Image 1 (cartoon, one colour):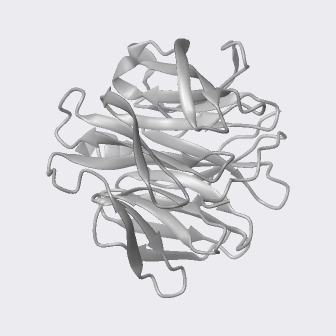
Image 2 (cartoon, rainbow, N blue to C red):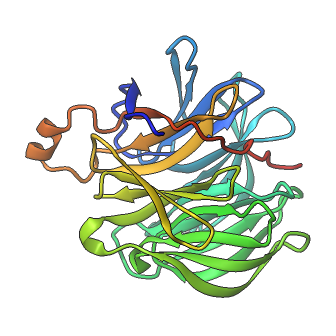
Length: 291
């Protein structure tokens, strides 16, 4: 049984994205992309700390060193939680002013995968990159329209990936040792009239949770791509979900208001908020960069 979504933080994020549970700090991390904000939310107190990165930031993940890694406008950086200072790991498309980094996630070998997208909705300007723990960057997939949700099956043999303009979640054969993708096939197709596929997460049972941009829903699919359940959200622009909490059974969902008109914003005063859903189901611990 899945409870109704609960607003736990009225973050007013313009473009909230990339939630991830830092189990060492017992905090939920997420970003407000275009503002360049990293949020560190404490569910036990309701306190929300905001770090200003100084450039758009599309994804964040904890590391084995205890700091964080971010996918920012000009590439990958380390972020010190104590000071808020960043240090560049590697540049990615730093010479381009028409793209930015978007969603990302860490694989079982501690590599961060994150992709880019065009700033003006230009078709196929993006790519998917892999940052290795040694700091080397590999271009894994191109061209891409809007690189978005990415995660792996529990057996680590399938990579699920969203390029939003395709209207699909695609599945790839995956070699975890070499970090390479193989055969591609459609996993789930989302009709445009119900929304656009955005961020995703795979739970402990191997089910895929997908947020629908302009759809106001979170959908759960089994490993064969069959729809298992739908959670209606009180906001239209849902972006990504993450399991958190001590037992990893709280599903957190980020949202946005960036594409809402004045009338829609009036109808959705909590757009850009952070929501929690008591699913009764469990997620997996977030993997750490570098491990």
